[in-house]
Image 1 (cartoon, rainbow, N blue to C red):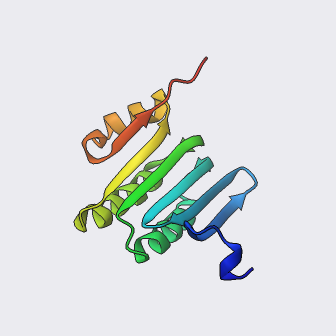
Image 2 (cartoon, helix red, strand yellow):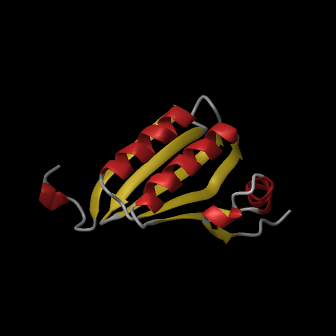
Length: 127
């Protein structure tokens, strides 16, 4: 693929997989980093999340968007990776937004005292 074959807004994209059920997809569009979390993001997948975030942060993104829509589980290791990314992005004046956060993920972030650190876009899942 040549430079002319890519969309003008897409600079790079990477996918990090643990299994077919747990993945971290990262994409850089202009100066924004997008991360999609799929499946269970626990201590065994967090190194892939850290790698994806590190690559995006190396590109000096000023906005990071993390999509929780396909996330079924996350633990303290995932939370730690998000907090580290938040520290790096906000240090340079940027923001981190968590999107498609369901009521359960929201409650975990609330209990952890992290609501003030992230711009959070909630969704309501039907039961």
